[in-house]
Image 1 (cartoon, rainbow, N blue to C red):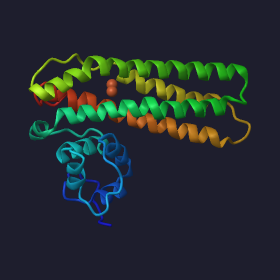
Image 2: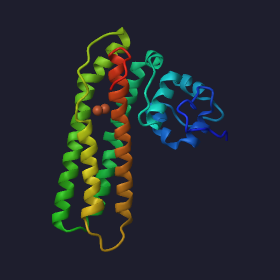
Image 3: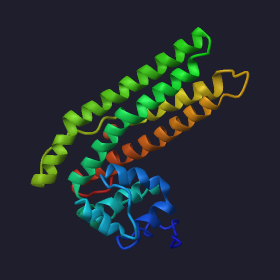
Image 4: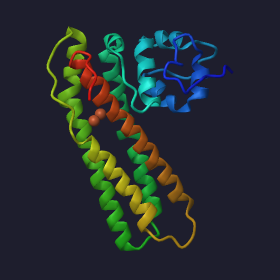
Length: 232
Ligand SMILES: [Fe+2]
Ligand SMILES: [Fe+2]
């Protein structure tokens, strides 16, 4: 396997092998998945894998950089090359995964952990999770109905108007951290419970992924539709 210098934001290139990229940065598996690419890469390069699925390698690598490097800022030239419709497909696929897979897994995990807890704890945590889940789904629904159609139109016609992304991104991060804190700081455990550890790992993963998702909406999409100016 090629040794990759992942400290540099520029280490990603279309000519590197996809399997080397994923072995070096397993967190990018989600990007591969949300971009509609399937496993079985063999010795194929990033470019070959993207083109086989009708994806633009440049847009894929830009998403990878935003995922890997917190605070990554695109140059004006980079903004000019990103395909807005492919980024929108990516965001839509993230929503589907959160709604259809991650949230049900969390709900099941919470049910398991709470099954032998006192009634008062069950009530607090299940109500808190229910509120978080419903608000998150509502947030996705608003973006899917009011923002994504405009993005596809902008991608197609090169122009259009866009209602701003919701200002709720900060609240989403805070709510999931509050849920983590409930389980981590305020529930007393008499014995070790492996189910809580698994549940917390899932919550941390969702928190991380949602933060990246929001970053892409706020720091790639918004400046992109404003004409490629970096978003402060
Ligand atoms: Fe979103
Ligand atoms: Fe959002």
